[in-house]
Image 1: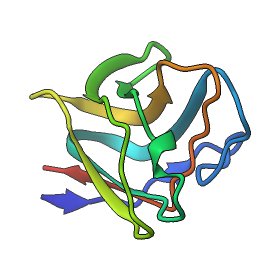
Image 2: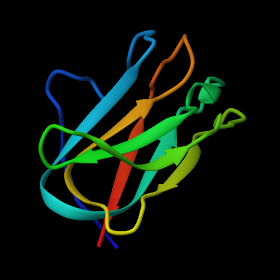
Image 3: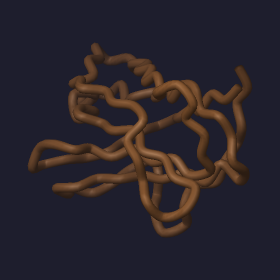
Image 4: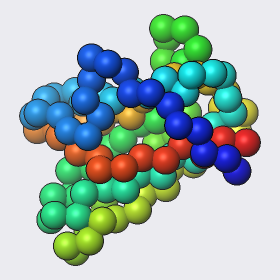
Length: 118
C-alpha cells in the first residue's frame, strides 16, 4: 500500500466543521488512483462519538458514489481513536470525500486522515 499526499478542497477546512445537518470534507488526490483504505485519526478529547454514519464517497468528475461506510459512533477515552474504513474493491478515483449521512447536530472534526492506495 502507498500513501499519497492530496490537497484539501480550498473552500473547505478539513480539520473542523461547525454544526451542520450535512457535513462533508473532500480531498483531491491530484491524480486518479485505486483507493483501498481510509484511516481516520479521530479526535481524542472526549467528543469522538461525533464521528458516526460516515460515508466514503468518490468521483472522477462531479457525481459522487459511496464506496465505503463507517456506522460508529467512534469511541475514545481521552486518546485519539483510529478508525479504518475499507473501500469497495476496484475503487478508483481522484476525489474522495467523507460525509456524515445521519443525525441533526453533526460535526466533522478530524485531526489527521490517511488514504491508502495500491
